Image (cartoon, rainbow over all chains, first blue to last red):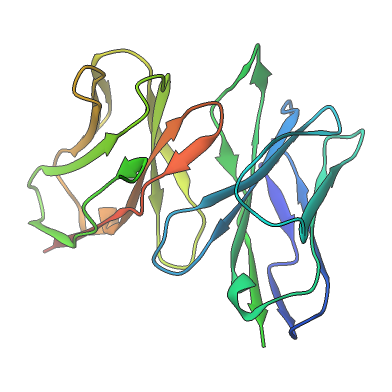
Length: 115
Length: 108
């Protein structure tokens, strides 16, 4: 049973560029959440996708956008990259039960460095 | 006040001892609580979750929840050097809110 997968593992971009990160959820899961983790901090919630719609969003600017596909996989897009966007980007998948998301399992993450 | 608070540590314990990690949260409506372990440079790995007041045991790990005091803890019995990692407390308010983590060091 494959767990959550993410690609790429590492990425180096320059300021102003755009980046797309990808995530495939664990088998049987229908919900994907994205987090940003800066060094020495806990993961910060960016947004969550369910049924191809953004279900919830954290305090991140519109430069951060996403998409969920019919097979439940998801993309995170970041436009106009800033130095402060350098972080570990984590994808977590879960199964939505009623109105509350169940236990979330994380992928290995994508380390983004903005120069 | 931060939504989820943890002591950043490091918490240093000798091998074989009990490590006690604590977490407080601000949202009284929180329904479920999670502990994740994160090794340096890796992603968080789920250790335990707890929904009800009281204790929940899984092997060497025990999670404790007190909703009246808005307090969650994780006990690690017979600590091993391989337990050395950052432990993240997360509270589900329909999205996961994480603390900054407590760094645990288990020395031989």
